Image 1 (spheres, rainbow, N blue to C red):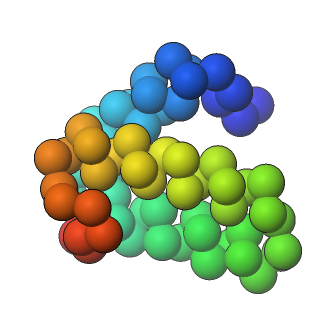
Image 2 (image 1 turned 180 degrees about the horizontal axis):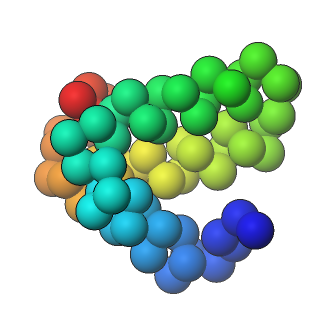
Image 3 (image 1 turned 180 degrees about the vertical axis):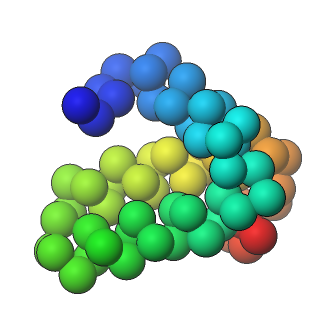
Length: 67
């Protein structure tokens, strides 16, 4: 099940960061590549939102690499 509420997405992003801290960029990139290959626009929108939340949690400037 995909987290749908704003609160669920924040919790999801925080948990991803806990689980994949050192490899979070690679993890997200792989998911996005798979979704793009499948043409899943809703999935891509979801991961864009999660990526934005991850960047805020990490404290990285907008547009920076997650690795």
